[in-house]
Image (cartoon, rainbow, N blue to C red):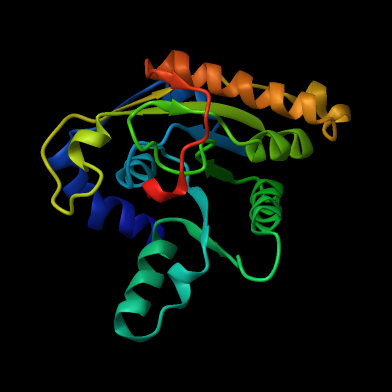
Length: 222
């Protein structure tokens, strides 16, 4: 319930005022069943606009620190991220990537929508960076379709390094679904995993019109 209140009553009016968002190709997102939404990542606001404009509930994976901070502020953060459709993973003492991917597989096994940014972090320079292979590994293991999605204009509305939002125009483009299930028997082959990832990133490049750089985005840009 809180997800829908958060989406339509709390953040919806604010996002519509600042971003005047539109979405094209939304009909390409299946109305039911497991789906992976894989998007470029320009700013923190990307997740909020995706949640607002996609009809189905999107679940993201987030670090557990967002949900465990003490005090009133900590409880507010926990409520915010939970209401925004994020679920926690414990990144301490183990393989954080494995934990995140296991959580993603559970989300898809329940027939839900998993939202993921293949670059792994926000682009530090507005270019599209090399994709990490997690999304491909989950797609190959689960058989879920991957739908490329690109954000446009969020960097102007929510510039990196600033707290104040600005007025702008946000648009979301939804590409054709990608079905990698035929490669499932080769899910453990690193060359297949890399090729699958690169195919997705090419689709994101075509949709976004960004310049591409064949290096990973740095976590320090977050």
